[in-house]
Image (cartoon, rainbow, N blue to C red; front, side):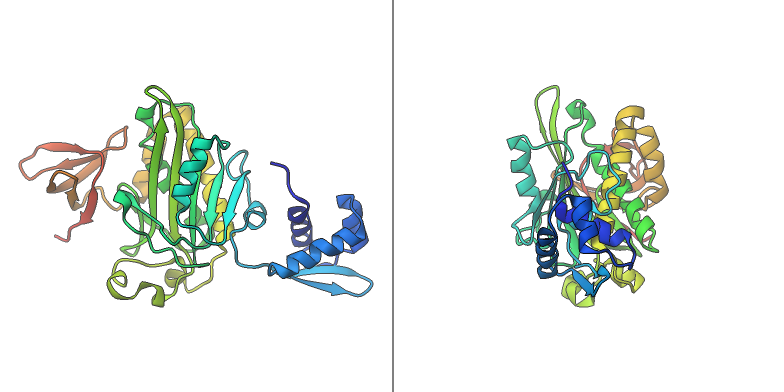
Length: 328
């Protein structure tokens, strides 16, 4: 997708790092009139960009709005394909529902659906997901890898290591991964992942990875039963986090690790996953649709299944379950 004039103006002002840029210089670079430059700058001001006009010198970008609009994420993108097409909503019911429909309509590989707020955000087993306005990252990514359906489940673990690396890069936090789809900080959930598949018998049509990351919520966002189980990056660091930068970092690492998985197989992803995991080596309770079992988590297989050693010594492979870490 080509970069819009608006994105080019923002990028140019940001790159100037506080030095003024004249309207004439912008007009020449963008090959538009100075009147059009003024109209774009006026529009950016209405969107929350603080742009100062200095007489006889030019324009300075003082502050950018804290949004996940495409031009904000695009400023930080370092990907070849992921995030080149961003579908942005100030509010929607569920990015996952929208992305699922968009995938069926044939949108391109790497298309990202992102929203400031979800009114019907959902996690695994259609559970609701708290998606407060302007505080977190609520997004769903459409991938179209050339793989067979039996290799799709591992993308949940690929996404987990990508988000963990992105958080580590942009904050002082080092999250841990609880199999299969949760990221924790100090034992509290900061991220959930929902991976869904569209496929034929022998070929993946689309993998839709839904991600909910608690970023700048305060303690008031997690009152009642959420207080003991959920947290945000701001609560853990005491600092405001640039959501657009973090979203772009997630896309960067998702592209890197997806390519690694497709090219080299699951083993290198497994090694990275194990370095972040908080499940292996612990006694856990696994609740599946059919039963509940307890035992020692001893590893994951190359197809992403959790290996659980029961008290009688039997080893069971678990492909989908809710996991509770048990205190001994």
